[in-house]
Length: 212
Ligand code: JB2
Image 1 (cartoon, rainbow, N blue to C red):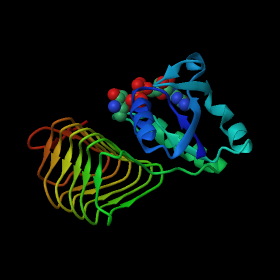
Image 2 (cartoon, rainbow, N blue to C red; image 1 turned 135 degrees about the vertical axis):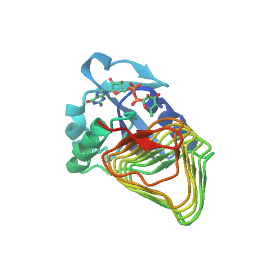
Image 3 (cartoon, rainbow, N blue to C red; image 1 turned 60 degrees about the vertical axis):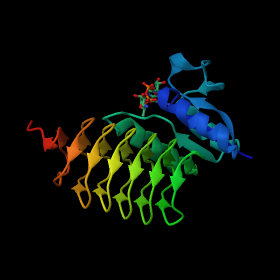
């Protein structure tokens, strides 16, 4: 089994560890978090160091890393840590919980997590460093760009397009053929029936952008 280091030891990390335990493909050497959390145990895995030790672990032969920070509504730390880790040279696996149903035609980028009970239908493309969280449904021909978070229970009907760095709130529904831009947040429980531009915050039924 190859060694893997996790980055961020909060709630999202617990979900990833649980899936990794069921997959048994990696030896998790530990978690990196902030100084005050070093020494804590998260789902049986120790927080061993701060992010500044990433280079040292790479030199010692750890070649796989995974960003385990969720960052609800603000992906910036997650993206920063992914880029920093990639620059050092780490590889990022794709982690698919064994309870997810994923068509063999789906393309999934590195560093992306597919959570428990998700269903991903044919011809879907998902970019790198995404979270496809518990119980989501991603229907046929949808395209999700890098660094997106599709929160628990959200449904994307057929051929939905989501631009990079966007967040689709928990239990939201996006009807077929809708485009949602980049850096956009869709609030929890929204029903999206019209396209939503980039750099928007939008919510409700029907989902509308909030004017700021
Ligand atoms: O710079 C950092 C840093 N800043 C905060 N580097 C590293 N390596 N870790 C950092 N952290 C750590 O991220 C915090 O000390 C904390 O341990 C963790 C964030 O944990 P939290 O539970 O607050 O959030 P999360 O992102 O793991 O989970 C959120 O998103 C998930 C998708 C939660 O809202 C969950 O409920 C949700 N399921």
